[in-house]
Length: 54
Image 1 (cartoon, rainbow, N blue to C red):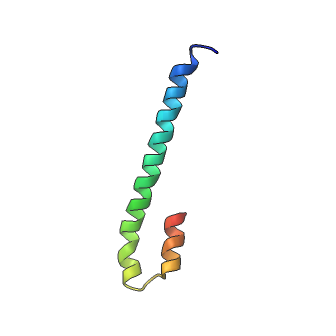
Image 2: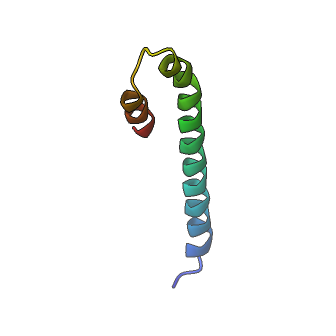
């Protein structure tokens, strides 16, 4: 094993955690934006779920 693998692996792990946090925040924002539209009956619950899932 090469000693250079340590910092690279730590950076990859940090990047993965950052990407995961970004995706979670994006989903929460999407839910917040779409919820009034769904509550007003402009989109169905299934459509709401499909949009948030993607």
